[in-house]
Length: 190
DNA sequence: GTTGCGATAGTCT
DNA sequence: GACTATCGCAACG
Image (cartoon, rainbow, N blue to C red):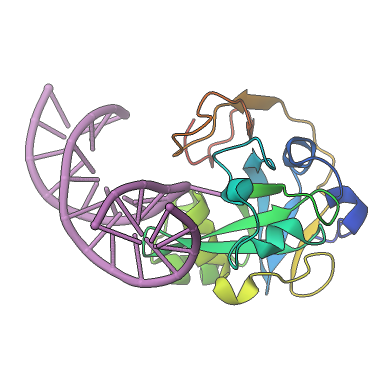
């Protein structure tokens, strides 16, 4: 299992694009399953019309405006859940969508949950990784700086960061806020 | 390997 | 009542 230090709240108390870039290579861990973060997207506050927080605080978006270092989990397309990490100081909206991971630990459990054998089918998409790790709507609002859902610092290995437009949105579709570990075989899309 | 489409339900207008 | 920050499978080449 990974043993790096858990990222603290100050790590998340910055703008979403900075956190999205800096969290690449870190390890997301939940209940014995873990994966290295290889793909993220930043969602900003008010001027980012693609963000759920763009139209202010609602029952659903409340946690995005809260303390950084918490999980924002939402339900989409009638069958999938996606995991975000809340950034920016309390009162300011901003979050990072975790889009893809490289399998690190708990691989047999993840295979069983996904009903797929191939490592590249386990965590290569926002809906897939929540299913593989066992993350549900019950995790909405939980603290990720301590508990059974945490992010740890990576092993320090070097990689090249790529920037592209975000996937699956129509507003602000040309903003380069998707960050990837270039060349990783575990991305949701190259 | 690539493209196209249907499934399915919460959230907001 | 419209619209999704998606996925998997079927039909092609």
